Length: 144
Ligand SMILES: Cc1cc2nc3c(=O)[nH]c(=O)nc-3n(C[C@H](O)[C@H](O)[C@H](O)COP(=O)(O)O)c2cc1C
Picture (cartoon, rainbow, N blue to C red):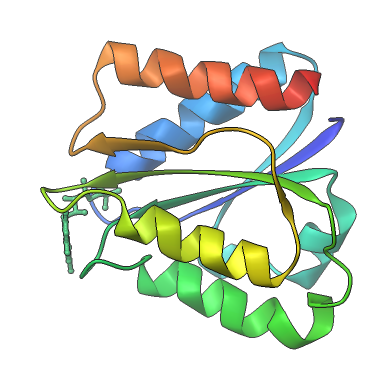
């Protein structure tokens, strides 16, 4: 994938550390990466990329409000234009597992996007091992 968009939200830095590691892996594998906080991303970013990686913390067993707001803003314009666009999801949670990631996947299914790699959910602050997995996620997506 040549142009990869990473859209994420992070309140306390955990998901942001993951996002930067994903971006690092994808960049080192030769992709052009747009790393965007959800409020700064929009329709043109989504339409213009070859693949998307979404990052979100688990907030109240759902994606972060900022990520939901991103989908709310782009939905009507992009909903017929995302079919088969490759995507992956990563995120951080406190103790409640992966429902935030699943909520993103559900919307991507609605957009008929194509999940091409397993999602990565980690608990709280990512370890070096977690960040390595994030770099590999970016690298794998770049090489698809
Ligand atoms: C408003 C709010 C709601 C949260 N709700 C949940 C939750 O329902 N389940 C859970 O596992 N963690 C929950 N957490 C914890 C965060 O998912 C966790 O601290 C995560 O590592 C934060 O990632 P961030 O640093 O990228 O913001 C919540 C945190 C906040 C601030």
